[in-house]
Length: 205
Ligand code: GLN
Image (cartoon, rainbow, N blue to C red; front, top):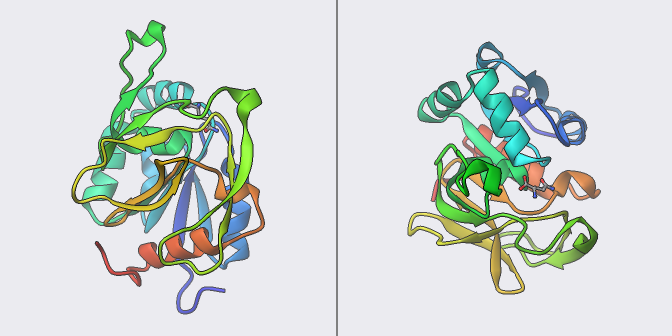
């Protein structure tokens, strides 16, 4: 349970695994808003971008005019966490965009790293493993589904966990990105960490 006033957190609800994040956040005492339109961001302290299909989410973000409002949300102090496809949307640069996108894919550029899509293989190569996460005690159970890897990590970005030599959890100030899906296992520690960022209870790096 979070102490103090319940933090208000949004979950981008255009596509993908947003309900699982919602339930996890609510179980930790947060008040959750499903974000589909720019006006839904009003009054929120944090926003989770879920896993799903980043190209589909990017297209819906075009349609609902969410790009600039999400950047403004960050600029005005909002915390952001992207899981899997959501991490792709946050990155400075995306590698491995499909040919119909001309090999280029739009992203928010709020996290100083390059993300390589589908770095661990296709859907059939999905797997679960345990990660040593900097700052957490016991290993963290992590589900990887057509997951990206973080490459070209910028100086101001801290790598908090790696798998098979690749960065899979990173943080830059109030922006967190995981290549895996913490909402699909029973471990709430990363959601708790994120609520700490939302409440500015975790010092910025
Ligand atoms: N491979 C997907 C993408 O590039 C992400 C998969 C996921 O979010 N589980 O968007």
